[in-house]
Length: 141
Length: 81
Image (cartoon, rainbow over all chains, first blue to last red; front, top):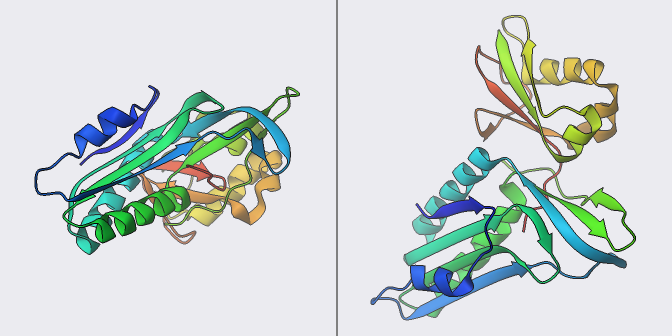
């Protein structure tokens, strides 16, 4: 199982290397990055909070669901926590498979499901010094 | 029945508590626990019905009965990614 929650920066090249497989004809990588605006407000950075043990368990379950639906060769999911600045990578999902179609579909499913069903929260830090928790959606079981 | 309650994000801010040990009668459900947590920390009322609970790392329904040693997570709406 390659599901991880980490405080360290995400290295996209290392993430790509980790799903390398000689039987894979396609690799899809999704990177989530901190953007400088949200709902019209100027964002300086985000602070991520995570229920680590549960998030890792959820990500392992998501990998299991992905593997049951698509013939994925290798897959990596990493999510950061702590303080992140604009431009930094908060999440990476990388999938390799024999053909591209299943890599695209599996990657899309994994990132969408991570967003809906892992216990992760973010606090917006605005340029004016204001801070507030991003609204979010009730977690799905 | 002793349970450990963990508060996250806005729930942690509203209660000024990261975790606490709570003693509840035998047969107490998650719904009943949430009600008593609301009495203990009135500010939690702000979260209304948007909060969900986990027991031992799995999302549970409010009807779930608590057992001794359970770890209960109080989870406000999530926003990963």
